[in-house]
Figure 1 (cartoon, rainbow, N blue to C red):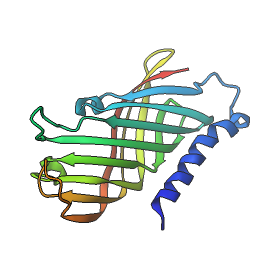
Figure 2: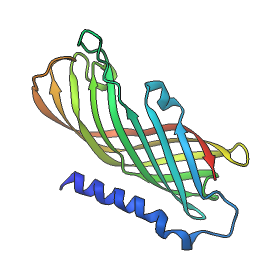
Figure 3: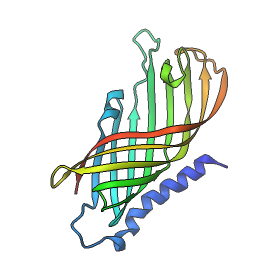
Amino acid sequence: MNWKRVLLSVLLLCLALPNHAQDFFSESKAPIVGLKTNIPYWATATFNAGLEFRLAPKWSLDIEAGLNPFDGKNDDGSYDRSLKHFRLHPEVRYWFCEAFNGHFVGLHVPYLIYNIADIKILGTENERHQGWGTGVGLSYGYSWLLGKHWNIEATVGVGYLYLESDRYPCTNCGTKQEVKKKHYVGPTQAAVNLIYVF
């Protein structure tokens, strides 16, 4: 199976859905679009933002992206720890009350490309991994109304990821040792989002 074609198809579907969802909007005054950012994600020096579109009274489409462009390169050309990556996270959500309010469950299809080095918790101590990954997962979350235009949302998710990377023997070496393929099952999402709703 060609993962890139599957991912491209999912992304095109996610981008097309908001344009064809107007007939499903209710007459309620519930928010239609939310602009969000994951507050803890900033602690990893990762720029991130997302848009969530209400598709129907109890359905929404959330598309989030994160970019960490920093490679950990020092002035002398050596490298320190690096978490350089791009992550795209589309998710379809079902809300138990109404979109942007209360409990929800979601189905997400994340995609990432990365170049990480010397991070023990990720299994890259004294080495560098450069590659990509994609998968599928389920999430649960809750959104609190803070005011007319502001929400805060907490969500966690678990699922499956396929990861493929080139492994290099140290953080600043350039000779590829092997291609690693990994099947991961576990947490795939954790967020506390601050949201501005329109």
